[in-house]
Length: 292
Length: 210
Image 1 (tube, rainbow over the protein chains, first blue to last red):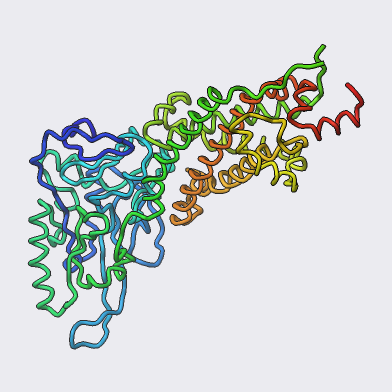
Image 2: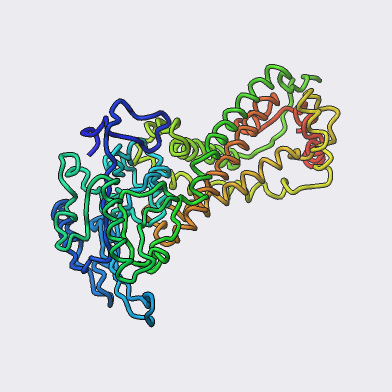
């Protein structure tokens, strides 16, 4: 998915000039994942592999329900099961089974895109979807280094990076992502980001009434917000959900690397070469007078 | 009739140019990914994916080549008290090109020694950090934080290396008669007397007038 949406690209990896901006009336979309109504059936995983025609290798049971055990180049979403001890208001601690659908968060400020050295291998569409354009991918793994959520995976078969596309191909033609379509409990919703946040707000009111005082939205501002948004029963402790980062942001190492350092370094190199040229012109060659 | 002094044997010269060619390959392929403006350099290496594949091999071969070169010249690049004095006088040299008023120099002057150790340090760092994010062979063995630090150190070391090479190349262009040391292996006596008087005396003492 690239040329189809050439007027809908908000940002492009390794590109220093702006993308075409004529078309602006595009609504930002979001996928809302309500962890509190997820039953862990994995229909979303199945829908994802069916729509995207992915057939990951059948793995082994590693003692938990997570299957496959991790994201891969052919598994773009995975249910993460966490058994945790929590406490509701006026209640002793209790055991809770938190099930989080893991996958690309489609950050407004994507670390993968920032880190990518290949022009147009990662794009962010105006609707907020962050997509990998595999034909431009060079397999360097910088997206893995840049991502604050550890999402991209480099295929061992073709050395290309893969992750959830938020079904950008379906969304382009007005369909919801495959996982949303398949979810039997309505735990995954899709729409404009405004609508999704409004819906999430209703869910949070409901959860708070049921005693989850800390229920809240996970739309981390450190990455400019995301286009996959969670409703969490314990929004004060996102780490409970299989290590969901509390305050994800692009690592300062990545910001330094892809920020001021590189233009300065390039300027220093060009500067050194120019200084050499002008030094030669001013001072002239250092020459031994031929004698004897 | 111009008389010549031997400065570098065949093996040192061939080793030097092997490293230089590999530096060009590793440098240009690396710069392609250094800044978007330089990405078209990937065209020199058969496209972007091939550039990504080849770059680390160029780098490892360059470091390997440098190890042999290092073994041949490191002793003569050890820092001596007279080098500190030379460094103090260096700004004047750069301003005027007046070699005669500089403290006497052995086989290498302090500037050359600095460049040599900058090469050694930056290549060592490039070598170590390069493995940490080398796809697809080694990157997976390192945690992501280690890879984040490694890419920054790799880029910084590469910058140091390129700047040192620019100094190295320009010095060879600036000081006339230097280039033939690495091409023909010999320098003129007057060049040796002027730029490396202590070394010249040493060579004369050993070989007589050659």
